[in-house]
Amino acid sequence: MSPEPAPGFGVYVHWPFCDTICPYCDFNVRKSEAIDEDAWRAALINDLRHYAAETTGRTVSSIYFGGGTPSLMAPATIAALIDAVAKFWRIENNAEITIETNPTSAERARLSDFNAAGVNRVSVGVQSLDDTALKFLGRDHSAHDAMAALEIAAAIFRRTTFDLIYARPGQSVAGWRRELTDALRYAGEHVSLYQLTIEPGTPFHRAGQVTVDEDTAADMFELTQEITAATEFAAYEVSNHARPGGESRHNLICWRGGDYVGVGPGAHGRLTLGGQCFGTHQIHNPARWLEKTKTEGHGTAKRRAISFADRTRELLMMGLRLREGVDAEYFRRGIDAAALAALVSAGLMTETTGRIAATAAGRQRLNAILGKLLL
Image (cartoon, rainbow, N blue to C red; front, top):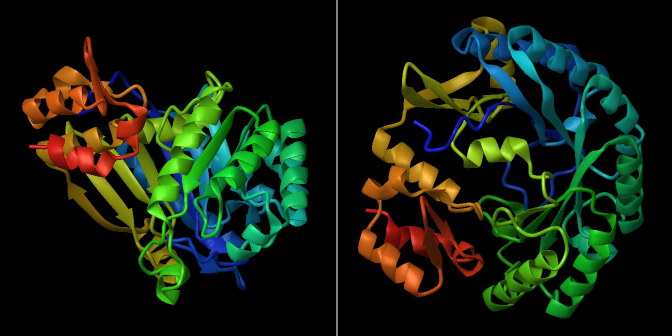
C-alpha cells in the first residue's frame, strides 16, 4: 500500500525515561528513578521477538533509539538490542542505527561506547546555543556543553545531527539569524530546526503564559529556508535539513509510507501484513507495559486495520512534508483536482511529470493545504 518504491523497513525503540522533563515536551516520558535495566532490556527484546514472528524475512534498514533519553541506557543494553534485531531479522550492511542523546557530560562520555555497541549515527538534543533560552526550555546543559558534545560526536561518528528550537517568546528574527548561522558551523550532515509549539498537556500549556507570535514564527521559518538554502543544508522536509545523502533514513521510511516496528511504552508502528496495513500502539504507561511484556510477551495496547482511504490520506499528509512530494497517479483519486490547480496557481503546490509537491511556502501552510486538497 505504499506509493513509492520500497522505502525500507525500520525498528523504533522507545526509552521513556529522562533526568528532567522539558516543559515543551509532549512525548511519552517519565522522570528517571530506580530502573531495573535488566528487566527493561529483556522486555524490549520480548517485544522485538513478538513482531519479528509476524515479519519473517524482512530486512531492517534503520534502527532508531528514541525517547525520552535513550542515551541513559547502558551501552551494553544498546548492544544487546542491536544484537536482538540482527538475530530476529537481517540487517542491511549500511543500515542506519541512530541514538538520541543530550549534551550533558555524563552522556558525552558514553558516545564512544555507543559507537562500539553498533550505533553509527547520533542525534544531539542541543535545542539552543543561548544559555538563557536553554534555561527557559528546561534543559540541563549549557551552550558550552552543547558545542562540546557536537565536537566530540563529530570526532567519533561520521553521521551526526542535532535539534534546535526557534520562535521562542521574545526571540527576534535577527537573534535567530545569528544563532542559526553560528550553529551551522557545528553541523555534520543533518540538522532539525523546529518551531516552538505549545502542545496540550505540556507544562507550558498548563501554565497558560507561554505564547508564540505566529507572524514572527513565519518570518523565522522563511529566514531558516533562506539561510539553509544558501548552504548545503536545504530543507528536504518541513523541519529537517541535510547535506546531499545525509537525510534521516529512518524518518524517510515513515514519511514515504514504509513499514516500521515500534516497541517500548507508547511507541507506534505501521505494518503491512497480507496486503493490509495495520497501525500498532504500545501501552502508554511504562509499568503496565513492562508487566504485559512479561505475561504476554509483548506490550501492544491496540492494533487497528487502516482502510485504504485512511491510509491514502495519511500517506499524502506525510508525503507532502517532503520537498520531493508524492506520486501523482497514486493519489489522483484522493484529491480535489480543482483545488490542486488553484494551489499550483497560488504558488503553494507544484505538479510536474508524475509528482505533486508543496513549495516552501506551501509546506509552511500544510494544514490549510490538506484541508483544501483532500476529498
